[in-house]
Image 1 (cartoon, rainbow, N blue to C red):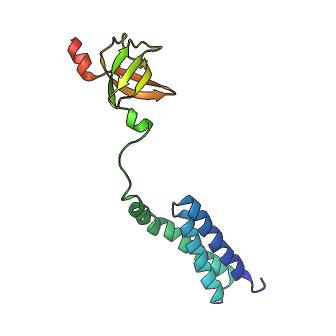
Image 2 (image 1 turned 90 degrees about the horizontal axis):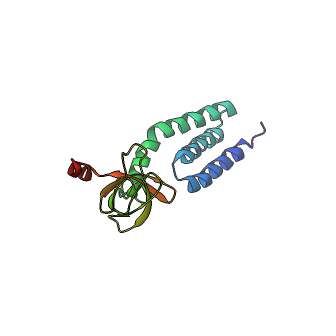
Image 3 (image 1 turned 135 degrees about the vertical axis):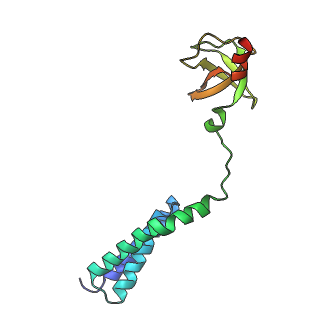
Length: 155
């Protein structure tokens, strides 16, 4: 092509490395690694099609063999604690204002007070003081049902 193909390979290495800095999932790092292999092949005198095949093979091998252990290592020290909505779903609380299918209020064990409504399949309304469990969050309201202890107490 003219002897300057190495510039394209070097540009790809830089481009993929910069994108990887933003993405942080090691996919573009493997593409940069493949491009680096293509650059080395090009500088060693390989034809462009062979350099392309080498780059593709190194990138694919990197994605399937190198990326998974790197991701495991990266996420090994992650905080396993749930946060935000994930932490609210499944939590318990008590009804503060009678809860019906359209409204009410509960105070959760974490101290937060939420607007609440009953889960669609829940029979009857819940009186103040009833123990409840959050099954979903819908906007600024929690969807609740009576906890198993509260249901057993009525029987």
